[in-house]
Amino acid sequence: MRVQVLRPCLILTIVFNLVRSARSVPNGEFPGKPEGAKRNGAGTNNLPRKFNTMTQHVPCSARHSFRRIGLTASCLSLAMSLGMSACSGDDDASGDAGTSAVDDTAGDDGGDATPLTAEEAGPVVDNYAELVFANYSDAITTGEALQTALAAFVADPSAATQDAAKDAWFAARQPYGQTEGFRFYDGPIDNIDGPEGQLNAWPMDESYVDYVDGMPESGIINDTGADISKAGLAGLNEVGGEENVATGYHAIEFLLWGQDLNTDGPGDRSFEDFLDDGAQPNADRRRQYLEVVSELLLDDLNGVAAQWDGSGSGNYRSTFVALPPEEAIQNMMRGIGALAGAELAEERMNVAFDTKLQEDEHSCFSDNTHNDILYNFLSVKNVCLGDYGSVSGPGIDTLVEARNPELATQIADKLAATEALINDIPAPFDQAILGADTDPGRVAVAAAVTSLRELGDMFVVAAASMDITLNVTVE
Image (cartoon, rainbow, N blue to C red; front, side):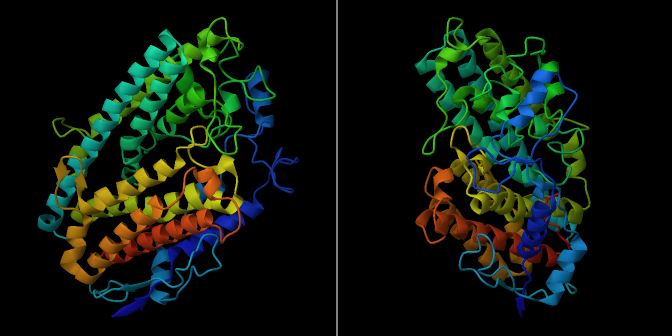
């Protein structure tokens, strides 16, 4: 039967825009930003005065309220049952998609769907657990290589050792970016005790860590009373505001590239910032910071990977594979559905598409955002197909194929089309979002956003075919 699906992204976009327009912001314009654009300030906090002055600096990106928006599963179910079409050309980055039409041979509302059995779901869940562990293991391996390169850089700062450290950072982002689909269901990466906020928090107010243009004494590095240790930096991370990022990949990124003041390229921090006789003070603390933050990053990665280690006992993996089949599969589909349709399409792409601001891209110091988008998408693809590196087995597609072969084909085609559209986005991303909506860069970004939204919709329908209600929004 042909079902017209109310696209969840329409509701996401409406609520997102309402929250953005309603949120309170401090008075004052963004320096150098379009007339009327206000900054989403951090306000005051309990840190020393030197830290408080940082809130006057425009961060790499203003933290958006969208992450706090939660659309209930009941709203999604209602949207599905209404069978309306939405997300037409009026959306910010709607492209030419118009109505999303999905063939749902399992029924309009999944009412005649057959619940999963342990025999069906078990191999998929087991393969997923192995895939997750392999992915985090690769993140550790590249994290160790990054730590080695950073150690070589701080031991002998030069243009060559700095470039080698940058290359190692790029390499480390590839496997980590593919772990993003393991989030959004309170697993070990982002449950209440999870380290996600220490590993990959963004956007980042760079002045919280080090000097920026016009604020030569700002940051933890230039406050000699601030403790640069693993416990010290962990304790300072996101204190006083979510943009006060002190740890993780993006703190390292900022220290390597520096503030991005270029319109057509990344930041260009000099290696001399790390020399004792360089132009910037506190070079010793800057070197110490890089070493400590890389140690903390590896601690966090190892902690998450241990929870997915099949040779361990009593860890999260042992609990996950023992879940009722519908709950385990729901978690898996929640991870990739929320990443594709909400986090990636909206928070990481459409916000920047809407504002046209360089500061709203993910990796704004290194201009690596186009790669971030690709590897985040690959996380969705990997889980759906059950493949990552040497791990290959049944994925979500196996379960969909058994219930709705036509939908399984649509999802496979959509995965291929979305990957191609993402690869079509010209780099750097912060230049692709500029210009008129008819300019090639914006057309490419809009098309990729629309395709990701449609993919998220398909996962909702696929879950319904297994008698699973899926919430793919991000709170």
